[in-house]
Length: 564
Ligand SMILES: *[C@@H]1O[C@H](CO)[C@@H](O)[C@H](O)[C@H]1NC(C)=O
Ligand SMILES: *[C@@H]1O[C@H](CO)[C@@H](O)[C@H](O)[C@H]1NC(C)=O
Ligand SMILES: *[C@@H]1O[C@H](CO)[C@@H](O)[C@H](O)[C@H]1NC(C)=O
Ligand SMILES: *[C@@H]1O[C@H](CO)[C@@H](O)[C@H](O)[C@H]1NC(C)=O
Ligand SMILES: *[C@@H]1O[C@H](CO)[C@@H](O)[C@H](O)[C@H]1NC(C)=O
Ligand SMILES: *[C@@H]1O[C@H](CO)[C@@H](O)[C@H](O)[C@H]1NC(C)=O
Image (cartoon, rainbow, N blue to C red):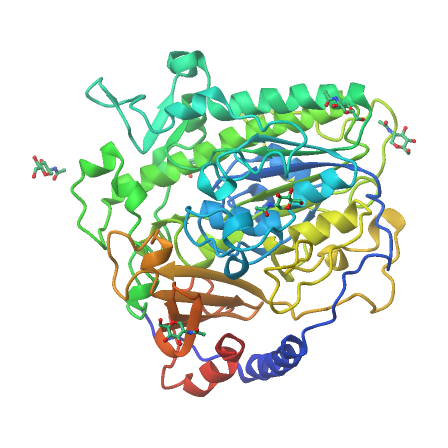
C-alpha cells in the first residue's frame, strides 16, 4: 500500500473556494422555497412508477460496469437522466427509506435503527406518496417500499401514504427459512441460494409475485383513467441470494475477480468498520468459522458472494424488464415518469467489508435515473415500444444514457424532484428545526441538473438554481469505537458515535462524533475518528489522509462543514 498521493494544488484551491462558498450558503439557511413555478417540466400531470431495489449499488451496464448484465435497466437508462453521484442518507434499509419517503434526513426522522415510527417519535411528516395521494393521485405500494415493522407502523404507513392497502408477496415469509439446497442435499438458510423456482414453497419468489401484482395494477389503472403513483419495491439483490438458478450461468466463477482492495485499509479508524453480522449468521457462512470481527472470508467464497450478487442483479433486471414492458403494453409509457433507484449500496469485499452498514461509497452510493416522456425521451407514435423486453441470455446491448449529471445528489431530494417533475407544488425547504412542520423537505429538486437541451424545455436563468452547494451527506451510527456484535445495527439507546459524511466531486470527509441518544445531541469536540479520501487519486477509498502530516491543514478546511 503506497503513500497517499498529495492533492494537486489546483484542485485544493478549487476545493477551498467551493468550501467557503458552501459554508456561506449553508450558514445563511440557503434560498428558501422550491423551484416550483419557475418552469414547468413536461412531466406535468403524468403518472409515476417508482421502482426501488434493495441493497443495489450501481453495478449496472449503464454505470459502466463491465461484468454485470443488466440490459433492461440499461435500456431504461438510455431513455433517462442517470445521476452518476447519488447517495443514500444512511446505508441501512428502514432509516434510508423513511428518509427519502419523508424527504427528511435521519437526524429529523430520528430513525437510525428499525424501532420507531416517525409520526409519533419525531414529527407527523407528510410522505412522498401521501403528497401525491393528497393531490388526486391513486397511490399504491407493491412489495418492499417502506421497511415493514414498527418503522412504518406495521402497515406501511397505510392509510396515510397509500390509497389502497399495500401488497406484500406471500412468499416473502420464506426468505429466511431453510429453503436452500446445500451440498449435503439438505435444506439450509444459506447466503448463497440459487433455486429451482418450481421447488420453492408456493412455487414462486417474492419479486416475481410483486411484478405480477404491479402489472395487474397497471392494467387496472389503464382502465380507470385516473392518475397514479405506483411504488414497486424489489427485494433483490438483498441477501439471501435466493433467485432462479439459471441466472448463475451468466457469471462463470472463473471469470469473477475479488474486490480490487479486499483487505481492511491500515489507516481506517476502527469505528468506521462494519463487521457484516448478517452475512456471518447464514448457515453456509457459519460453517466457514470466520473470525470476528475482521475475517477474512476465504477467497473462493468471496468470489461466490460476488457471483451470486451479480446473478441476483440480473434476475432483478429481468423483472424490471417485464414491468417496463407492461408499461408499453398498457400504453402508459407515454405519460408515466419512471424512477429507478435503491435504498443504498452494498460492499462486495472492498476494504475487507461486506453488506451495508458503513459510510463507504460502496455502501452509500446508489443508482438513480428518471425517465420523463417528452423530456428525457421523445413522445412516441401509437404502437411504438419504449421498453421492448430484452432477454438476458440473448444479446447484450450497451445503449447510452440520455444525460449523466455528475452533480452530487441525495435520495432525500427525491420528494421535491418528483413533485416538480409531475407539476405539483414543490414542498418548501424545511426550517432549521422542523419537527412541527408536516410539509417541507430537506432535499432540493434535481430537475435543475437535467440536461435542458432535450425535450425542448428551456432552463430558465439562474433563478431556482444552486440553493445549496453540490454536496451529498450520509451518516452512520455506532455503539462503540471498536467493532462489536451490534456495530452494524445499534439500537438507538446504544448509539454513542455518529459518523457524518460529506461527499463532493473531489473528496469524501467523514467525522465520527460523540452522540447522545437521550437528547439526540452531537458533541463536535468529541471526535472518535476521521476519514478523508480524494476521488481522483484514491477512488476506492483505501488511503485515509485525515489528519495526516501532509494533509493536516487541508483536513481542517475540507471537513469544516461537518464541524458546524
Ligand atoms: C398525522 O396527521 C394526520 C393528518 O395528516 C392525522 O390524521 C393523524 O392523526 C396524525 N397522526 C399523529 C400521530 O399525530
Ligand atoms: C378508480 O378511480 C377512482 C377515482 O378516479 C377511485 O375512486 C377508484 O377507487 C379507482 N379504482 C381502483 C380499482 O383503483
Ligand atoms: C469468461 O472469460 C473468458 C476469458 O476471458 C471469456 O472468453 C468469456 O466470454 C467470459 N464469459 C463470460 C460469460 O463473460
Ligand atoms: C469449523 O469448526 C468446527 C468445530 O470447531 C469444525 O468441526 C469444522 O471443521 C470447522 N470448519 C472449517 C471450514 O474450518
Ligand atoms: C404519445 O403522446 C403524444 C402527444 O400527446 C401522442 O401524439 C402520441 O400518439 C402518444 N403515443 C402513444 C404511443 O400513445
Ligand atoms: C444532552 O444530555 C447530556 C447528558 O445527559 C448532557 O450532558 C447535555 O448537556 C445534553 N444536551 C442538551 C443540548 O440538552
